[in-house]
Image (cartoon, rainbow, N blue to C red; front, side, top):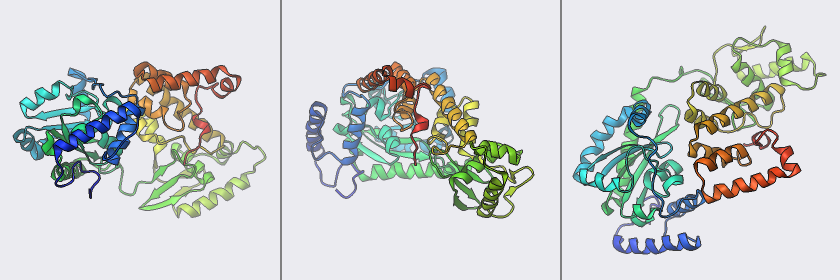
Length: 434
């Protein structure tokens, strides 16, 4: 097979492939091994599905209905390109007895349209608007796997993890925000075995690219073209972008820029000294020398003094997460949070900000009770020992792996070392990430 993302190679017998894959699926669900000829993308998806606690007889759950669904769809960025999806795919879906489906970044179906009789059949497996079809909810399927791997993918018949979905074949492609690159969701075509063809995969890829081009025309720029950008989450050395120039900063320079970006009014030398150095013996001369070096790195006209300040507003990932949390946009805040702020920094102000930002987001996630968002945090390096999040996840997704992990954490908590480690409930500040 030349393309691992295409379900069937030219000349393959669909009926024979269904039988072979059904035996492979039974082998995997029985003994946990994946025999040939299961494609790598499918084998990896089966393993992710099993690790998430999905069973082969599980069904998708409907999470949004009626007014909640309508409000969520109206505010979703992909609502702006639904007319384009219908124009490009509507007739194809109706004439071919297929379905056009669009999901969000969590695999939640927002729209399902197409052939009326096919829709009635799909209703029987909850392939309906408002249902969650992420891999972690229902196993391998094209829209759920496309957002999981951020690639266009076909899933043929018995490649589906859930047995009740195995009569179907689907192809889906992810759709991104054309300006930020953020994953928005996926567009999918679902129907019979005839969709297991390279053309259907190429078709949804082309539709997804057309949607991104349309979004680029519809959406105004989020920031001015030359607005400075600062990325400091999940990395020990921040990246500063100005006028197309990318600069990787030292740790100390990273700390200074993070603080100045959050204080556009500026900070005095004494304020910066206290914020950056726990050692009171560090002199203002040391700080001035550091700021002089930073000014040379950034270039002329970027860093002013008396007080020290940036001459243009800087958009940083820290500020984005804070702003979204204040607005109650928990999902958007979680998407922007790529890890602890400068995890190796020991600067007093950075340590306080790192802890406050992480605590604010994790508490919002716990209150939000979204199982996929909680699972994302719990399986991240900074959340794998976060017992409060694991408890919240077990309350909304009580699968065997989740319960087992929670039991292990609670057993550790009773030990003296565990109590000392988790006095604040998590260890996310102790696990630097690159």
